[in-house]
Length: 224
Image 1 (cartoon, rainbow, N blue to C red):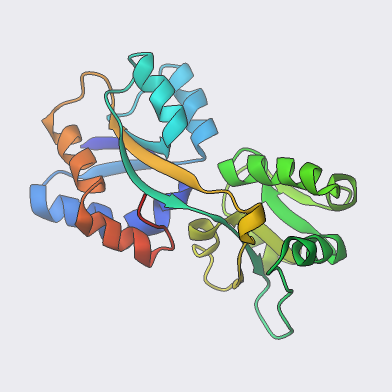
Image 2: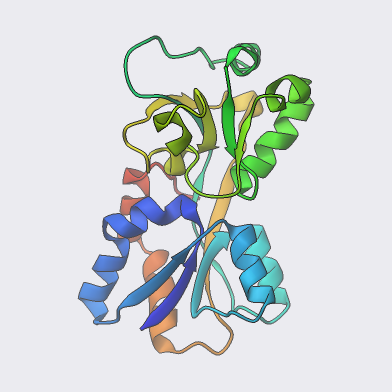
């Protein structure tokens, strides 16, 4: 059994076939732990070590340099988007930075993640746009998880997260990606734990393969 730590951003693709394809081809089963990269890093600091990890590329590079992980392979990237609740009604315009600002300020509550890469970026973006106080005064900030779930129970009427994570909640309506001038792309990589066996190395090779990339694209991610 291969123990895999994975960021939430690629969960849809992994669950939709990437890991099943690997098991069918090799016979090796994979046990997954899904959490934001920052949460997984805290587990590693506590010496809870995986055989393979998928996370934000830059953060994995630090673990490689520290000898905790072996060399990492980039697998996909994704931008940040906005989702709205299910049901009727017009979707807000977020096609320009000014339109995005207006939509965020007008929202009853905007949801984002405290620990996820997209949430950390969005919090800084609010400051850059000069609307942090107004949005955060009524924001729904979740510790981790798929923030579009807050749209289903009425806690928020806009959710901001990486596009692949928003798509994990199919009932939510995808408004679209952030405008390019406000966009932020996160590159994800996979790496084996230091000293991991051949099966773990085979999994990393599969995660970086063209077959896996096709699954990533179906889940809203892009090639690096």
